[in-house]
Image (cartoon, rainbow, N blue to C red; front, side, top):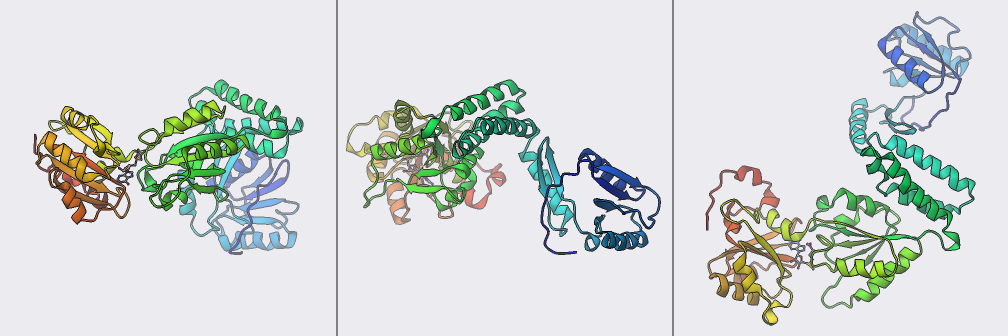
Length: 456
Ligand SMILES: C[S@@+](CC[C@H](N)C(=O)[O-])C[C@H]1O[C@@H](n2cnc3c(N)ncnc32)[C@H](O)[C@@H]1O
């Protein structure tokens, strides 16, 4: 009847609902209404005046246009809310597509525009919400009733629910370990009960933001970003990633950039500790993986020392993603069986074992190669000036740039191409193994299966 619908969840307990029609759909609708506790009158004969009298809700699944018109007129007279199956303009209400997980129901409506789309979305949501969400919803309900009875403060309750939602409880139920999930819930419930006036302690999650493309964030990182109260992020984290944050999330840039006073490690730790102590969910978002040249270990140690609950969500490191995005497999049968990841930071200044490392592996990945001339000069002297090399800049972003040249010439080539940081240097025969294809930009890796391999 209208283009705009108001969604509700009706309590049909013992209400009289009439279903018209001798069709499979009518049987299905009757069963659905009965399952919701309704008292169903299913009339399989043609419509007769008075059929809808006293009904709370009615469904005409008769597939008979004449009978449908008569039912529609009676529903208007009797003020009964009628749904005429598949005839949207004769409906007072329409049934959404449903995902049911015990007490949890997700309803999808396209306001009658496309039942197909509603079904397609239902299938997606069904994949997202496994059967474990039924018992988990019941578990949350139990916790809610108990915390309310115990008179626990509203904000403390909210934090407890959020913590339970992002805990391992759903995975434990999925793995058939409902007892362990209940234990997790109980621990959270107990800490909410004993939280006192200071409220519930928050937590810090160190999460990897990947190399740049938001698609390369893990599902775990996405989930905590959507939920975070505050995100302390590095300079390398891109705007596409911030769009994954929740509407109330505060973003704090603590990145180190040249020409700008950046927060000290001490300041960052202190801010995270204070936020977690005030009960917030703090996400420390680091480029790539938090534990690879990201000072993640130091931060975990400082947080633990301060008694803050902390966990780590690994990320896709640029050390692997940058070569991959440039179509360079860091290992390749018959070409490279070993890879080392080193930092180029300050190696120019003196002995660092760089040469020994480069000689002992097939592929060398150098992060932070700011002193490219010096680093590549030393590598050329150790490995020979013609060892293949590549500089991959801003990998996985739309500005990705790949420069390939022998190690003796790569610094000049990168300068000529004006590559921008961040960039990663890759050295080894794997650089040319798939040919000169920017695999990320072209998506052609699959087409390269037959490309020539040049063994060492
Ligand atoms: C401080 S390190 C942090 C590495 C990060 N934890 C990781 O796992 O990717 C920063 C270096 O990572 C590399 N890097 C980060 N993002 C990159 C990107 N999108 N493309 C190329 N290199 C990148 C650069 O070598 C940069 O200097």
